[in-house]
Every structure is written in C-alpha cells, then in structure tokens.
Image (cartoon, rainbow, N blue to C red; front, side, top):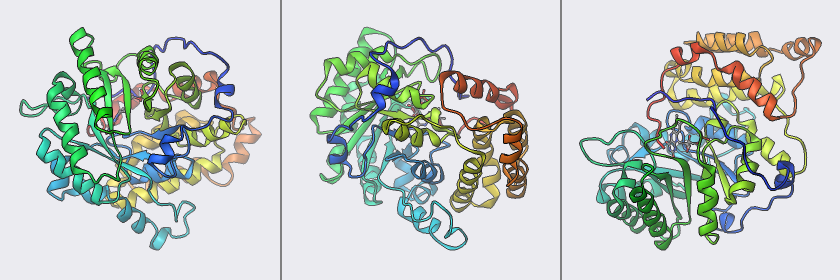
Length: 417
Ligand SMILES: Cc1cc2nc3c(=O)[nH]c(=O)nc-3n(C[C@H](O)[C@H](O)[C@H](O)COP(=O)(O)O)c2cc1C
C-alpha cells in the first residue's frame, strides 16, 4: 500500500480563538499523567509501522515527546519470540543505546519510556497471550490496534477490519484487558468507522462504548474510515461530535496533524484531550519541541542546521544499534527525504539522501549539507530558521513533494492504522 506523506485538500477549520491562545498555558487533563506518570503534555508520537521504532522514539523524546507508541506488533510475532519482540523491547534498546560508541551522544541516558506497546491480532486467546508478553516487556500501556486498514489475512479480521464485526472486536478488547495486569492501563486505537454506512457507524459506537465500560483508559480515534485508508482529508467534525457526545471520556484525536499548529487547532476545534502526531513528525521531531514552546507562550521555531545535524546523526546511530549497519543505510533514506524539508537547499539534500545506500554515503551527505560551515553559508545567503506558519510549512512540504520520492522510497512495511 503506497502511503501519501504530505497533506491534500484540507478544509478550513472552525476555530474559537487564535491557535496561540489555545496553546498558551494549556493544562493537560490530569487523568492522563495519573494513568501514565510522565505523560505531561497533550500530544504523543503515534504508532507508525516502518517508522516509529526505538530510534525514532528516542529522537522524538529528545525533542519533547512525552509518550510514544510502538509500531503495531502482531501477537504471533510476540508469541514466537520473533525479531519484532527483541526490536521492540524498550529496555534492551535503551541499554544497548547507552553503551559503547554512543555513550556520549546527546540523547544518551534517555530511555524509551513511558511507552505503549501496540498489539494487533485475530483471535482473543492469541492476542491475550501477546498482550501479556508485551506487558511483561515493560511497556507502561498496552494499546490494541482496531484501526489498521491492511487487508485481513486468511479470511480472518484484524486491525480496523474488526470494526465490521463488533462482537469479535469486543471479545478482542475483553481478552486483552483480562490478560494485562490490572495496574497497566489498556487503550485502543480506532478508525471513525469501517465505512460510511449507518450500520458501520453504529458498530463504532458499540465498540467505543464497550472499551470504556471495560476500563480502557482512553481511545485514539483516527478520523478516517478503514475504507478510506490514508486518502483524502480526515473528518475533524466527527471527533468534535464524538467529544460532545462523551465529554467525560479521554479521547485522543488522529488525522491530518501536519504541523504544530494543527496540534492546537485539533484541541480547539474538536475538544479532544490530546492529539496523536503521526505523519507530521516523520523527519520532524521538532514538532514536539515547538508544541512545548507554544504552551510556554513562545513562537514555534524551525530547527537550525546544527540542530538538524545533531538529530540526523543521533537517529542514524540509534538505527544502527537496532537494525545493524547494513540495513540502516536504506532504512534511513525515507527519513532523510523528510528531514531534508527543513534545509535551505531542500531539493539538493533530498536528492542526495535518495541515493544513499550505506553509512558512509549517509555521513558524507550530512558533512556536505550540514557541516560546520553550512549554517554560516546559509546565513550569508539570507537563510535563518523561521517561525512555523501555515505558509512556511506548505512551502517546505511542496519542496519535499517530488515525483522522485514516490518512485524511489519503498512503501513502508505495513501502514497499520
Ligand atoms: C506509514 C504509516 C504507518 C502507520 N502505522 C501505524 C501503526 O503501526 N499503528 C497505529 O496505531 N497507527 C499507524 N498509522 C496511523 C497513524 O498513527 C495515524 O493514525 C494516521 O496516519 C492519521 O494521522 P495523520 O493523517 O496525521 O498522519 C500509520 C500511518 C502511516 C502513514
């Protein structure tokens, strides 16, 4: 499934006040840090299959993300002790990252908590076993994926396809809640419906209600249907109406959060307690720092070239720990292409990242475009980091949106919700 990584046709949002006012002094709903100590801001880094591994999460945390979700993990992978299990063990990743060559890295000492381990499966007994394993690996939250649009396997539903089968979806939620120790919160990721039919809309309500009745701490609702996959605008009005119907529930919104301004726009327009940042943070971990800046009443600044260099190098080194040197060169290309949009010579940088295969090539691109004198050269040419506005973000994304990207970047493994 090819996934569009830039926004299209976003309708105007009905805001009650300027976005800076919504952000300034915003206080997180106390139920959130009460459930997950340390979750102290109204946003988090979403699960993003093919992207949100330990490396991306550590970088996000270094820039202010208070909470992250793993990529969707199949229960069978966990049960079989497969690669995903090792790769997603936050403590293992943190301990390996804290060792050896990267011990003096800026982000060293950070650990990958608090973290939701996201689980997906087809059968209640298997998903229960998988959730138990995940909880035993030290995740603070177990998140059930009822949102992934990837087609069902062997005629059995999983992910978002359960939204067409409410009884089975509820059985999955029940099995996970029963299997996970009572002290560990469970949460659920949903789409707003399987499709735009009254029957499917009722299914959503049943599953949504059942989750809260079983004690799920919150839901994250992606405001596209499963049928819609990632295409077209998300329906923020759906989130607004859902919150109005259930003002007492903690609900996180997901869909079309492309810039820091969208974080607070969604909070204002929809009334959600928080926002899941997904495609908007790929190659843009500064979105979290910017959100914190706005909460402190300061303008959200784009990164300097030195800051970009630091983050690119850290992300690469963390990736090498997780994926090994051979795979990292290719794995990082899709990030490099998105990171490039912050650079004054975005096109050149992007083209250079697209061609990277190896660590040496990656480091050479960084030296060429982010080296010690790059900032000085850019300043001489009149470039400096600017405040994030809709216009500046649109320009950067337009720069990033080259045909060659679609052609060259492999579709992510399994875009899962
Ligand atoms: C490449 C890709 C992979 C994704 N993988 C996951 C996943 O593993 N788990 C999950 O809950 N959501 C996943 N999602 C969905 C996002 O978390 C988010 O709900 C969705 O992209 C809508 O937000 P956006 O329009 O702001 O990107 C994925 C999305 C994309 C684009």
